[in-house]
Amino acid sequence: QVQVVESGGGLVQPGGSLRLSCAASGNIFSIYLMRWYRQVPGKQRELVATITNTGSTYYPDSVKGRFTISRDNASNTVYLQMNSLKPEDTATYYCNTNARTFLGGRGDYWGQGTQVTVSS
Image 1 (cartoon, rainbow, N blue to C red):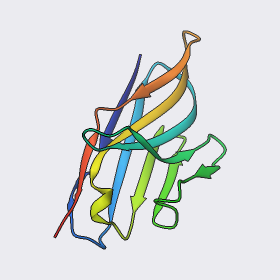
Image 2 (cartoon, rainbow, N blue to C red; image 1 turned 90 degrees about the vertical axis):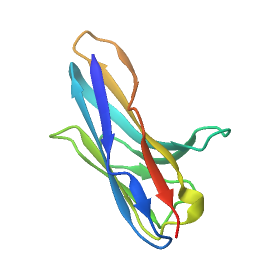
Image 3 (cartoon, helix red, strand yellow; image 1 turned 60 degrees about the horizontal axis):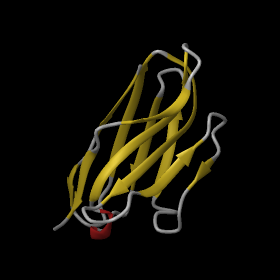
């Protein structure tokens, strides 16, 4: 029904920047929330950024001031600009899209994840 594909991960040195992208496609009637999560093996998945369909954003203290989420509603794409990266930002980053399909159902759709490694 809905496909979600992330891109943009990679290896970066501490203090560097990366920009992640996530595109949603398929049988989409409307997208509400778009979020980025991250997960380290053995730990719970952590929410790192949220953006509503009106552009309101939310960040936890751990990334506030360093990460910026934005979205292009015309292309159903969300971005995560990550600056001043730290080794503790190393994780697999997942995109989550909360959307309603033309069949009427509303649900959460996940991408496959993209690895971000911050290391010198």
